[in-house]
Length: 196
Image (cartoon, rainbow, N blue to C red; front, side, top):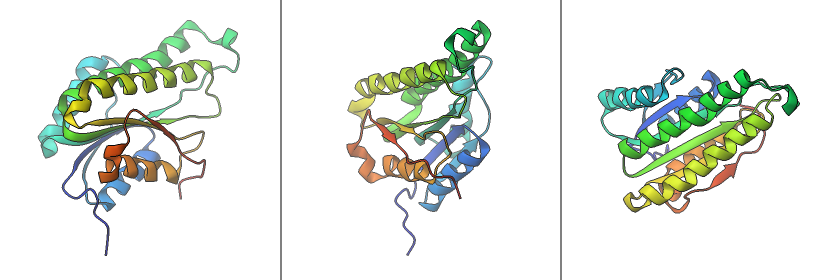
């Protein structure tokens, strides 16, 4: 008998590579969730685009119970002295500013007892700026737990290492399922095994 631990849950999945986004979405669907897999980015004006993202999901399926956002590291020079201001600004916009506004909107739109999961994946050319962005995102998640914890909403981070991993999907399912209510403000690290 197929498990349906997320039966009736409405999930918004966004960001990341198409491969990982589809894997995460399919894992959620297999567990009974209704998933809106949104491919739109929030690059130009993150704050209003973040609001649009949740507005679109609400129109498609009603209130969002679970929000999963996938962040992929951006290539940068190996040495900090070679990182240009333009490269730094791009990384900060994509991997700090955009997640901040998405978390802000998620806090307003995710239903009570819902789940927010951020997935951090790295590449082989991810350096100090990406590491700083990851630290910022983990801090945002921990702080947000204090603001919305009373509504029973959990906020967690999955760190996917340098490869897109089957274990990322397993950890997302753990955090979004019923047992995930006991985990809040944490970063779970996935093993580095390739997606099948």
